[in-house]
Length: 171
Image (cartoon, helix red, strand yellow):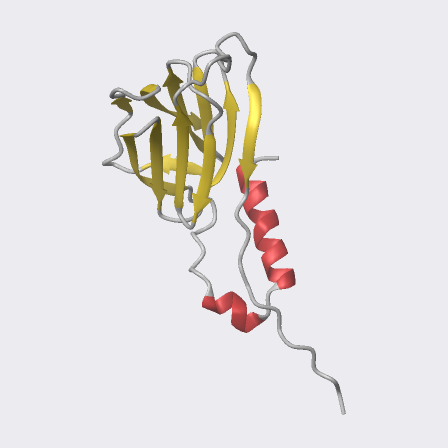
């Protein structure tokens, strides 16, 4: 399923489940066919971990997987903004480098974050609003996964939040 098809499916689902008043209260939808803009990508060392934080103009659809060299997070239907760096070097934590790759064609786009690690434990990926955080803990003894094949870790597609309308009994 392409990201445009996914966006249309989410919009159709929202139109079927939201009341007209609830649909108008949410954020304004992006114009059809326009990818979500990634506004920033930051890499920080934390005590016992590294954190990659992605901020976008709207909630992101993403999938993450582990590779031989680290983690790949794919941001569907997205493109980097003009101030986003295409490569970040790591500090003293388990993330050694973050690289951005833009993929796509005429009708779809995605941004891949290639997060290179020096070992590291199981990553935790969290989304809140239009931000995405990937925490990579330092490697615990016996948890090195450098020889493991690529494995799907997480996947997320945001859905609109709404409050259901109260039931009305016709008189």
